[in-house]
Image (cartoon, rainbow, N blue to C red; front, side, top):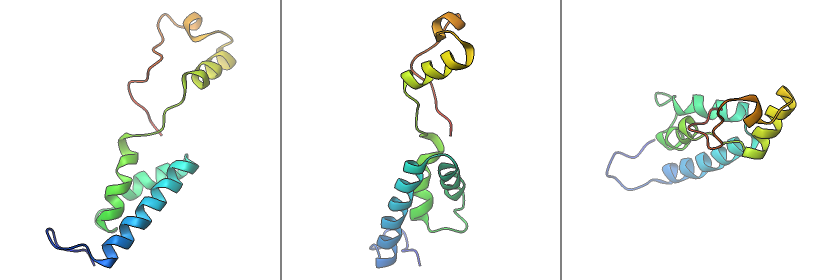
Length: 99
């Protein structure tokens, strides 16, 4: 049961909030498909309690970002050259991130 807007938090709401935070932490820690599952669950407002959809919504637009060293290493391995050598321009700071 979900508490009506403006009413006191129920034990169920508190339990949902705790467990949503735990599941969000696990999804972010494990990455990959787990973040995708959290993104999907964030859209299930017709099925899941709002504590879950609200917590998981952060996965929709706040995906983990790779470090510059990791990006540089992948470009060098795949293209055989540093990013600045392989491209005319290469921004070190991402404008967005995706899962």
